[in-house]
Amino acid sequence: MRVSLSFEKPEGSGLCIMVDLLRASATITSALDSFREVIPVGDVEEATEYSRMGYVVAGERGGETLPGFLANSPLEVREHSGDALVLTTSNGTRILESVESQALVGCLNNLDAVASAARNLSDEVEVVMAGVNGRFAIEDFLCAGEIIRAIGGEFEEYAEASVLAVQDRSMVDDAIRKSRSARRLRELGFAGDIEYCLRRNITENVPVYRDGRISLI
Ligand SMILES: O=C(O)[C@H](CS(=O)(=O)O)OP(=O)(O)O
Ligand SMILES: [Mg+2]
Image (cartoon, rainbow, N blue to C red; front, side, top):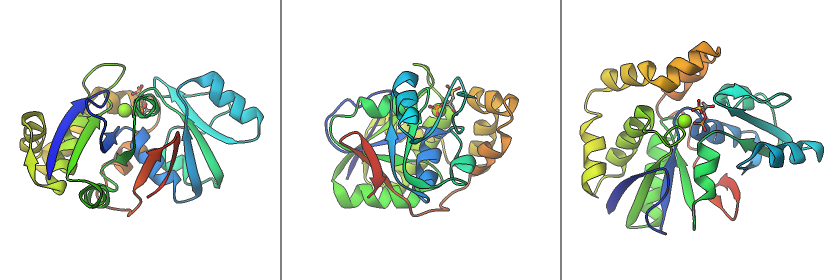
């Protein structure tokens, strides 16, 4: 198994795992408990159009929930159900739109499940950190490190660095709690989401993005 790590967009065209720990990956993973599929859309206008058609919509910009939408929150979306959830977020949904083939969605909540699915699907996987508006985000790097360690195999150097960074779990948790993204979410009243996103292996859900939709693998 060969594992690489990249930032913002996949460098190859094979299997990838999109990691946006706070919060798009966790929201998508959680939503698939109560929705058959998630439709990720890049812009607010398109999501609003879906809303007019009667779809349940969720989304934010800069962490702030869009008016009339559910929050990009793993805790909030699981209180709703339906056939499809339309989701637009600042980073995660935008990254998925740049995926050419298929992408799994990974977070700490589904850490071992997504690692095992990747191993079953391919002998090469690229983990893609979403970041925040083009900037490195430590929470995505550390989450990627835990997923890459769980996948195992041969790591390219960036991937290896992420694994070396996650030797101490309490340091990982502290760094994520102190991240710019977490601070911003706490200011907006989403402290509960941060703690939820830090929980390891609480679900077997492995979301897969293909042909513009996300469903369980
Ligand atoms: O809603 C979130 O947690 C973030 C907001 S921000 O742009 O990083 O402030 O969006 P996401 O697409 O989940 O990174
Ligand atoms: Mg994020």
